[in-house]
Amino acid sequence: MAFQNSKGKPVLLRMVAAIQENKAYLSEIDGLIGDGDHGMNMNKGFTVFGERIAARGISFTVGLSALGELLLGEIGGSMGPIYGAVFTGMGEAGGRFEEIGTAEIAAMLDAGLRELCDIVDAKVGDKTLVDTISPAMDALRKAEAEGAGLADALEQMKAAADAGCQSTKELVAKYGRSSRLGERSRGVLDAGAVSCAVLLNAMADGILEMGV
Amino acid sequence: MQRILNNPDFVVDEFVQGLVKVHGDILSLTENSRVVKSAHMRPDCVGVVTGGGSGHEPAFVGYVGENLCDAVAIGEIFSSPTAAAFLDAFRAADRGKGVACLYGNYSGDNMNVKMAAKMAAKEGIEVKTVVANDDVPSAPKDQPENRRGVAGEILMWKVGGAKAAGGAPLGEVIAAAQKAIDNCRSVGIGLTPCTLPAVGHPNFEVKLGTMEVGIGHHGEPGIEICQLEKAGDMAKRMVDVVVPDYPFVSGDEVVVLISGLGATPVMELYVLYDEVERLLSGQGIRVHRSYVGNYFTSLEMMGVTLTVMKLDDELKTLIDTPCRSVGMKQK
Image 1 (cartoon, rainbow over the protein chains, first blue to last red):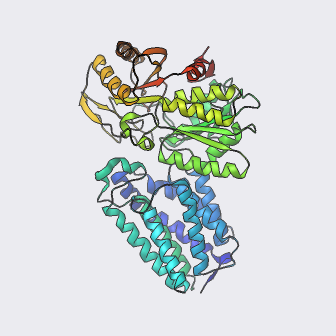
Image 2 (cartoon, one colour):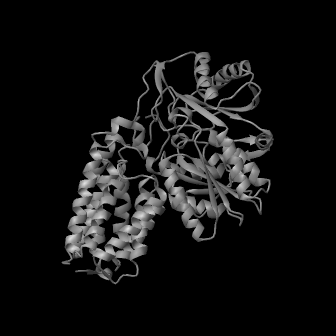
Image 3 (cartoon, rainbow over the protein chains, first blue to last red):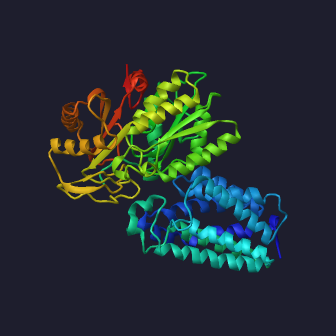
């Protein structure tokens, strides 16, 4: 119940495609309480990444590091450093793995989350992507502790990410630009929480499609 | 949209190219097209770096020069520069004595600076930061961590740049810049909205005949929308926000900075200054030095910001130090 790191490129392409497919949706959500450019910014970064790796043989973790560095180097604003931190953290932590199973993917996401927490002070409940990624991490750890196989662990992670993402709808933003809207931010999903759920789902589905 | 543009997506790059052509005696390009450095960096000094989104010209790049900032990271319009741009600015400014990164309190800038500082540490470059939070209306006094940085940043760069150029170690440069911004209070009034070139229409509204008190540098909502007032009443409203917040009191010596937001005639800024000075001196607050002009703008917004900084002996010396940059020249 694991996949070869060196053969993980399709997972990366699945993540790129997911962002491209959700470009308009992400901008629409962002436009309700933000400046409406989230889908465009994410699409720009992921599309460039997709083009750069198209003709390259690249492992899952080397690709994650390259994606993170591209976001840090070429996408400013808030999303560049946020996802740049997550993916460089995941790529660095996973670089030594030849095979990636439940324990390995949990260790990688844990490292990504730690990198993220180094640069943002947002906590669960603040209406940010932390509301998606933190419960997803908890689900992976729980699955690992229970000895779950990779497929089961990923399904549990997906469910937790989706539930966490949906929880942002009824929250009032306490961190980031939309926090200045106070009560007006209630009733709308957080765009970063949604893009994070899109990415975690795509990563999980990409791994599941490899037949683990 | 009545603007002078080619492709709006390249406006920042084209701006930087034109700027450096004009001011090659002050500014130099680097290998990173979004990093500009001073053409006259003194050896053996702490590096002073800033950075922020474009659209605030002459900020931020206009405060790179002698006895001011050494390098700047330049972002898209109203969007933080990348972590890589901040890192390259740290590299450009570092002369082995460490780097003071002096920037404004916005979530994107906070994250990119933190990320860049982590990367710089791995290369052995020590980076310390001061985060400007001089905008009074953006959060209550007991939440200084939620206040935005606005035009007070210029006085922070002036003080930090002069301190670094004098040969002070990193800790002292940071302490002086922190004191400068701690002693600053600002407020803005917006009269019209502004338009991002790539968007083509304003994304907020200021109705004709009204004004928005406490508006942010990107159109962030203020604390009150009221009928447009005479300059004297506007001045009183602004002074009544900044003076009690610090509070500035009789006997204080201060710097006053009045900046237009881009499209307000400079003539009117002096009209406002005359009223502000009268109100301050009426309270026994003495203006030691003043700056009036388009120092920190928001594209073509009409409106103004008022910044007041309390001086002590050290700050007075550093504010009076000569400097030379695109945005500020002082003998």
